[in-house]
Image (tube, rainbow, N blue to C red):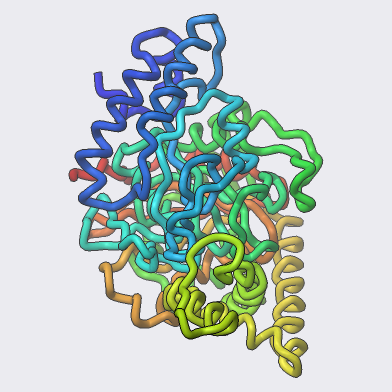
Amino acid sequence: MDPTVHTIHELADLLKSRAISSREATEHYIERIARINPKINAYLAVIEEHALEQADDADARIGKGEVGPLLGVPLAIKDVICTRGVPTTCGSRMLKDYVPPYDAAVIERLAQAGAVILGKTNMDEFAMGSSTESSYFGPTKNPHNTDYVPGGSSGGSAAAVAADLCAGALGSDTGGSIRQPASYSGVVGLKPTYGRVSRYGLVAYASSLDQIGPITKDVRDAALLLSAIAGHDKRDSTSLDIPVPDYPGQLTGDVKGMKVGLPKEYFGEGLDEEVSRRVRQAVDVLREGGAEIIDISLPHTEYALASYYIIAPSEASSNLARFDGVRYGYREVHPDGGLTDMFEHTRSTGFGAEVKRRIMLGTYALSAGYYDAYYKKALQVRRLIREDFDRAFGAVDVIACPAAPTPAYRIGEKIADPLSMYLGDIYTVTANLAGIPGISVPAGMNGQGLPIGLQLLGRPLGEAEILAAAHFVQKHRTAEVPKPII
């Protein structure tokens, strides 16, 4: 038996019935990682000894009659989430040797659930990127075609799930960093409502936009993993003190009467024809299931990218000011230089090009004389975008659209053209600006064998609705996404 091909819920059933032990499953994953990871660079660190200890503990709990949807299940964690005693690099030279003294809230919740942590996955440096090419530790490759990017910034997690190097993974999403790589890699990626999952222990990029969420092989797994990590945390002032629904219980397989909105702004210029066709086919699956499809408009969408690329870099310039070579992390010291010289050399050599670009953009937008013209104006546009969604959800239950305007592109194709890469976020940044949940579910492949994702957006705390719709699409879809051959 090869446990690595199974979903989380399938593996949980096998563990519960004692058909396989958690140690055996974990050993299979460790062996597969050792064989496959050198080809795609999805993992930055594999914590083999610790994972086997967790697996043995899970087996002992199962032996005592304990059951749970994640008990003994091997998972991977994006390397922007703090793990006590395990390096958390954020894909950066700045933190290449940093070992946190504490666990993030989501790691604590996974430990309570009995999950096994296999290791930390690669990412764009400090989550700033859409291709996982800006990592200090080299790019991650798409398991479906290793000449192509897996998406970003959670590309390592998406690639690991697609390549069966873990049963599921956690990523983070600031402007699409879970949904876009899920689309490119042919897996499921869910960004929860802002505040639904604690950000305690998540190394901040843009604090008003960041959310942790699951990347999985199917929608049921996403619901299970979200149920485990969601909930109030007093250590995060933005955490919502609202009960967590039974997300897996919402997967009834019925979408009859559901109202699905198609925003005209998401199906216009710049959308790849094959992406449009596959997304519309997936929407037809909902229509055939009894959902009502309604044309809607989100008129301020055209300003979303401009707003996002002011707000996110502005918050990043503030959040990343702490990495100065003084307290922890990388330090560049020259014997003849003073303190200012140390700051300058540390930050100029410790950060990569994309991170420095966004820090400079944000610092400029927040500077005296420009704050009102840029940052304040971007916040006003953000409010208009949120109001667009509020009006739309007065008429529909979910919104269906592409997760990205194109399938994955070749490694190196856009890294020297930041604007072209930023345009790939056009369908995802709106959900972060509005604080609403979104999910990408596979909708098929293009003619080159690259995956395409359908994105479903929901009203605030509407995870149950988008999970139900995504589950129906995945169950009844007409276009399959085959496993990568690597």
